Each structure stands twice: as C-alpha cells, then as structure tokens.
Image 1 (cartoon, rainbow, N blue to C red):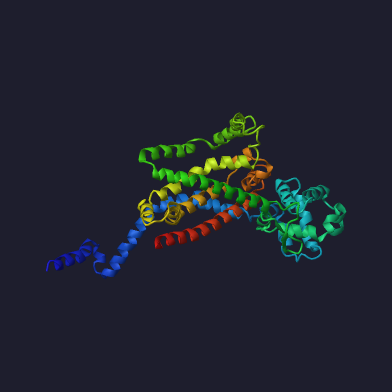
Image 2: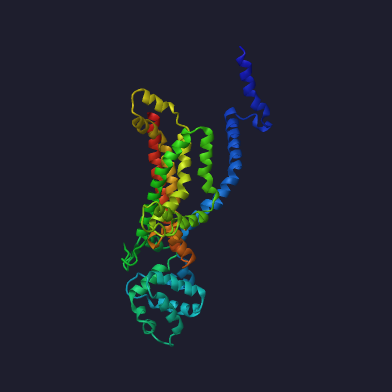
Length: 428
C-alpha cells in the first residue's frame, strides 16, 4: 500500500523537472536524452586529458611512423623529374622527354640545398650517386642540339645504365619502404624484389638481436634479485618494511648519469671492487669489469631493479598468508607449498615487472654508451647516431618503429598469457 505513492512520485518527478517542451515526450525518449546528456558531460570532463595525450603521445608516435616511410628529398629537389620518371616502365633508358626535364631541372637546381639533399638521399641507395649528381650539375648545360642520352653519358657513363635511372625513379616516390627494409637488413633490387642485404651492410638484425638478448638478461637478473626482496618486504613488520622500501626507492632520486659514473668508479681496474677482491686474496690482478657487457649488466640491473620490485610487492601484499599456512597444515612441504600455492598467485606481478623492465631495457642508451664497448651498443645508440650525427631521420625513425613494433608484440603476448595466468589463479 505504501509503495504505490512512492512509485508515482518517482515517475512524475522527471516530468515535473523537465522543460515544458519535453513533458509531452514518452518516458523512454526522455530517459535516452538524459543518458545522452550524462555521456556528453563525461566526455567534456575527460576532453582536456584526451587532447593532452593526443598532442604529447599519439601525435609524436604517428609522426614517427610516418617519418619512417616518408621520402621527401628527391621529390623536393627534383619534383618534375620524379613526376616524369613515375610513368617510366623501368626498362632500358627513360624517354627523351624525361631526360629533357631532368637536364633542365638540374640546371635550375644547381647549387641549391634541395639538390644536395636529393643527392644525399640517392647516395644511400647507390654508393657514388652524390658525386654523380654534383658532377653532372657542374657540367651542365649540354651543347645546343646535342643528343641528351649521349651528352649525359659523356659526362658520366653511369647515366647510360638502367640501374642509375631505376634508383632515381624508386627514390622519387613520396613514400618508400627503403628505411624499414634497411632496418631489417633487406633491400629492393633492380627488379623491384625484396632481397637480403649484402654481408657488409647487414648489421641491424644483429643489433636488434643484441638489444633483445641484453634486455632479456637484465630482466632475468632483476627478477632473480627482486622476487626475494619483494617477498621479504611483505613478510617484515610494517616499520622495517617501510624503511627497506625507502632504500628501494632511493635510486629514483638520483640521476642516471650519477649512478653510471659511480659504477665506473667502483668497477674500474683500480676501483673499490677490484681492491676489495685483491685484499681478500680472491684475485691476483684486477678484473675487467667495466667497458664490457658485464659492467652494462651490473649497472642496468641496479638502475632497473626498483621497476621489478614495485609490481611484485603490490601483488604479494594482496596475497593472504593463510594459503601457505593451510597448505602446510595439510602436510604439504614448505617449498612445495610456496611453489604450488604462493608462486602462481604472484605471476601477475612477475609478468608486469618483467614487461616493464624489458621495455625500459630496450630503450637504454646512456648506460651501454658509457659502460660498454662497441659490441655492447644497443639499438638506441644507432637511433641517436642517425639523429645527431648523420641527420638521417628516416633511418632513425625506422629503427624506432621496429622497436615500437617489438614492444607492441611483447605487450600482446603479455596480455594473452598474463590473462590466462590470472584466470588459472582464480580457478584454483
């Protein structure tokens, strides 16, 4: 008896609060409009954050991906020639009309920075192309009435070769796969087929393999050291645990350069580590602990260890000790109780920490550059080299794109197997 007035009041309240024009609409329509206004309000609240992420995260990544296939040099330096060669079938030599456009455009572009950029880009595809372009530009114009093919061949015989024009036609396209293929030690031959790069040019797959291997070793070292420490933090009383946590977080307050320089001091031939080992009689002469892979592993593990401990600690903190006590009370040995009852529940933290450390390791530059030798340089070193030294943005973007693709693939694998691990833990 008391519920009927409440229901009537509830149903008539939106109608009383609605504008007069909406009071005649059906209740379902009014509810849909109210829900739509609510969603628009939520979108307005998150719009500033969405714009911030778009401008500072998604847009730079999109620009990076575009730069890895962008090919503006020849199109900008010799636009008419690039357009004329786009209609050439790639057999024999280009038609006389295309040669005339090329000669005229070379005369007008002589001495310009655009022509120099185009020559530099062509030289990446065929060695000696830059000197060919500059030599030809200095030798123009051709005598009046001379045959264009013969005149260009007289300047340099390479202009009578089909491959020379094929390279220019391929490099004259606005987008190219050259950089991405080069980052994977492949190239396009004269017939347009993708082939493996020559032995003296195939270096990037080794660099990428070294990057993945070193990142994996550092991740395993951090896991071996971080797992027992995170377990200790969850087992100690709160006061002691907080003190140790401060020590774990302390490296975050110190610059990476300072930490790397400190490891150089500690690990060098006359450093504290070698002096201590010699004082203990463990070694007779100093060990080579720096400027090699061992020094890189030590420094990177020290720097990245907190990134492994924190995810493990957050997961272990939520695991009740009742499970271990219950298993042991039922006769399960301590180690087997830990391995079959406790460890499976920590897998989300293991996966999260390993993923975080591995991704951070792949992008490391300063530590291998200062503590490692030539054989310890990772992909980030070559990205910095192409960015700062040779100003080859296409190659730097291509290597970055490969690393980004590997990171996304790793995240997909992590999401799949971590999700299966969580489901299996819940099933238990």
